[in-house]
Image (cartoon, rainbow, N blue to C red; front, side, top):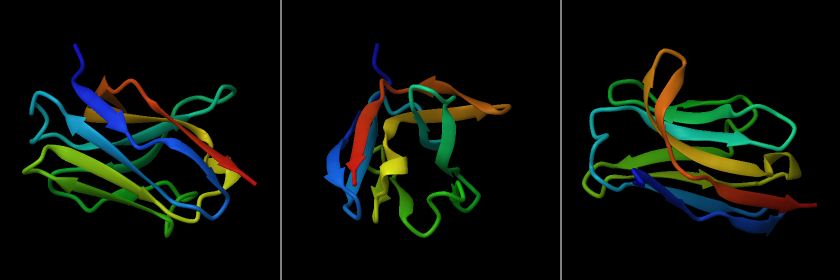
Length: 117
């Protein structure tokens, strides 16, 4: 069953913007941190941004100043606003929830983001 449903991926040119959305389909994660990872074919999945219940959002250095994560608890949705996109941002982006240790317990199916130069 789908617990996290992503949308908003697509293809843009360098410098463009996209907004990813992730719905907590069963409203299970309101007390959990949630965030976004990304993965390319030749690299492992890496954390892009995370928003927890009590702490400020965190961002990977590669996206600081360009990406903004936000959360709408009333709608059970998190967003990733991505501005000034670069070809290196090309990846499959995965929504995730509830870290225990270093990795989240729950993952979405992923949405492709492609940035052309």
